[in-house]
Image 1 (tube, rainbow, N blue to C red):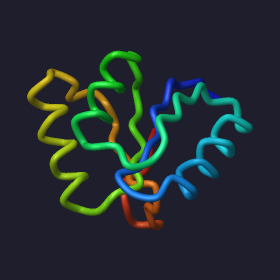
Image 2 (image 1 turned 135 degrees about the horizontal axis):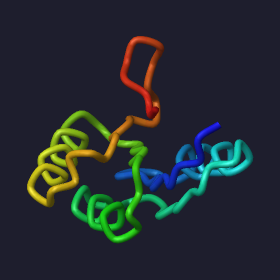
Image 3 (image 1 turned 90 degrees about the horizontal axis):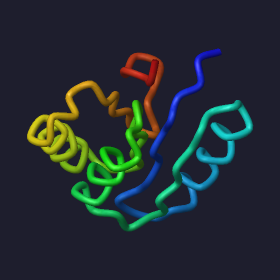
Image 4 (image 1 turned 180 degrees about the vertical axis):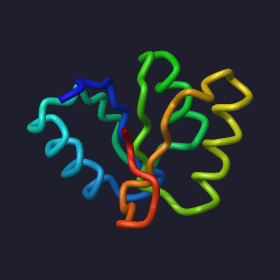
Length: 94
């Protein structure tokens, strides 16, 4: 399995994100958990600062769209942004 640095956070309640961070850590991923009530700007800046390859976000569609926009502005187009509650037909982290 490819070990990735993953930033995981939420724009709302932190509990689902906290549980997901534990699962990813237990699966061998390097996880930077930033908690809940984060702004899209905070999440993207942390992702860039941590040189992460994946950003997992528990947030709504508007927050995800803003995150994608910020990644492009900051030159972090290679970061895979994945919604925490991704269903089987939605994009997932690599």
